Length: 329
Length: 235
Image (cartoon, rainbow over all chains, first blue to last red; front, side):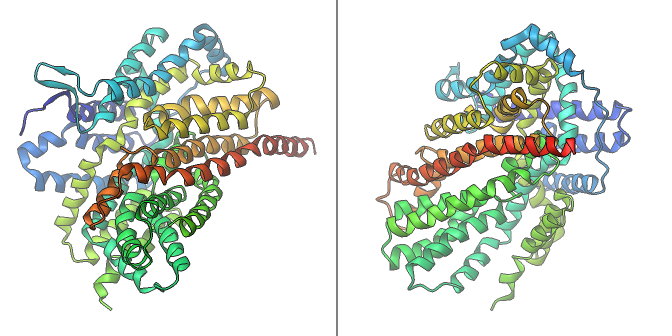
């Protein structure tokens, strides 16, 4: 293995995530108020394995075997969640009066650690990319934002502990209130990225491209524009990601028919096409990071409520896109 | 027609049906992955390997696990309550106005590439939603659950819409580079990232107008829903 060329490499970030997840697993097992505490603990333990031991496993067992083991783990995670074996503890929240009293003592100081996370992340991304100590970069050059976010979180947790008198361990313990409420939703984004990988291996994109080109009437510019924009949105809804849909729709429709045949201007064609894909992102549970995670984070009863609320905006913007593209390109 | 063409699509109806029937999403995704892989003739070992590899390579998506403890700790010490009482002290603050202000700031900063300035775990849960909810609570007292959920969903949607239709203007953003790369690969080399970024502006303006319009109706909607709720409670 090549030595890390940065002090805060992506591996360190994964170890930190792994430590948090493993601590949550341990605390879940010990939480007697959770009727499913063993399976809940097992779930988070299995999830943490890839973060804490994944790279060491690759180094000692090789890639094929490690990936197979992790593949089995991923199936087990789905099985635990699917068999309804993932539970939560009884988290006795402080009464609102207590919290209001605490809030009155700390006042605006409470905002600072929360605001510090995005502010420090952005400041470091802009300013600290090239910081070096000796031959080492401070931050992982390929995963700059994630490295910056990690430092921001570390600074913020230290500051939060200082003003509240809490400890990092108490913070993790407290986070179980959120983690239990969010449950499987927390790992859905990784699962979906995995499914995207299977679609790539199975060449699902090419199949869709062939199907779409079969339905096309190449003479009508309006029909082409509609199929391209709506196709981008629909295919993005299936893949959960406009980046995956773009090459398929652009190579299938935009390039052969709109650019070559109708001499469309490429720059607005690709820009508005991609943004039509984003309209799809707003409407699909497959974009879990944007649509399902927030619903879980905000403890909504209906996990699809964010999507439902976004649909009117998404459809209106999609109609604008079709109109813009028809007249602009 | 080639039957293998259809086999690669087998995962799609599974996903649509699975989500529609509200099976556990993790199971639906695994089922779709297994079915797709097996249908195109991957053996189970190779399929498991693909699962594991993609899982390992998408670990960065779990970075929310680093943010949750901080938010949870601050909430234990009353962050939410303070955000609500702070907003209540600003007389002109309403739910709709707070969300509109956030939307405009978020879309503008995203267009400059400052994407990490917001986010569902970083700003929406700890700050934006408590403030949006607090503004309504200052006026109407405790809110009915359905209304609370509606405001929460609006806060989340606000961040998403502003992000999506702001970030593409920024020329160093991944999507813009993906597009120029695609055009270059296909022999169109005279399109600069700047041009693609500029052509994202018309849609960005449309999204801004459409979503602000929707948010501008929100305060009236809240007033109406509180009224119906109170009428329902009185009856």
